[in-house]
Length: 423
Image (cartoon, rainbow, N blue to C red; front, top):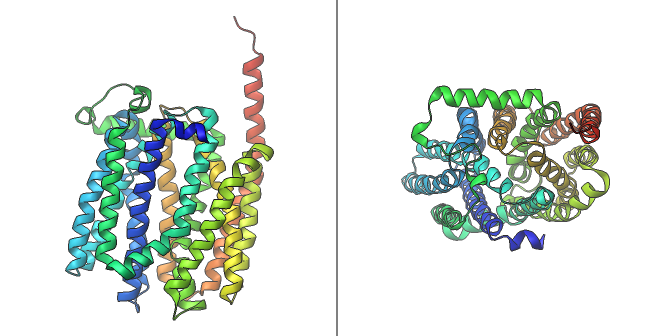
């Protein structure tokens, strides 16, 4: 892990990713509190805001990965930060004048631009470290997630309480500017910037983009192990979609209606502590038991824990179980996050990463749409937990059935390649 931070490129990329997530988490959580506070009789507004973060994926997924594999990835990542900073200033203007429709539109556009950042950042990371460091890098990225789960909602609540929604949005804007500056200072190897050769944005044509998108889709469809992993992301999207609003809704409408801001922050604090613990032990478990075993067992244990959460009627019982959920979920994310760059070639990592995103966001959007329509008219908070747990069981079972035979085929093919006599 120390060796990773001795790499100046990784250090700056890690810090840029941290800043980008910092602003996004603070701004999004503060905006959620703003909507729940200002429009308390309309919980669907908070769900609509979450939809604005996820729906853009379905509009731009076919192009973001292709572009990340064809043109300069550093240029893509930096300009994604700059454009989001500009859109955040527009969001500040519309919040000031209370134009809620335009706020949702800006959230949609900003999310669409952010989708270009992920595939480019993944490609830059893959090309800047060795394959033996993927698990450690994934663990560190998972620790960032844990930190923001630990402090994100609290930071959003603090920013909203002390600075107001406008102050929180300014923090959001500054974080994107800082991330862009750090990326500008990075000197990436040419193979990380443009693994498919030099191309400029004006050289790209729609037929070329469509052709490359189809190549990425064919790559996944022919790679059965990769296809199996990507298919599970639909259910991960459903899980993330419900969990996006679950902490606030659980406290607001079930456990603590009068102090929901403080107690919903406690949910993410306990979940974040669990993520940090899971991020530390996850690489050790993967080394000891393999990625597949950690993935399957982690998902199954998470499902049982989430179902148990739905049965809790007291905060003191709910929070420790949230901690356990974080500990079991983090190794699952590390297993997946470190597996992808190992399986996928540098020439296709952008396209594959971009195709994962819409699958996940389709599930995310379906879940949020379901919550917006069904809660609180038809289902309760308890049943939201149960549905979440059942989805997790479905993913765990599908991996238990499908992954072992695919891994055996992969190992056999690798052994045959090694033992094949050279001509």
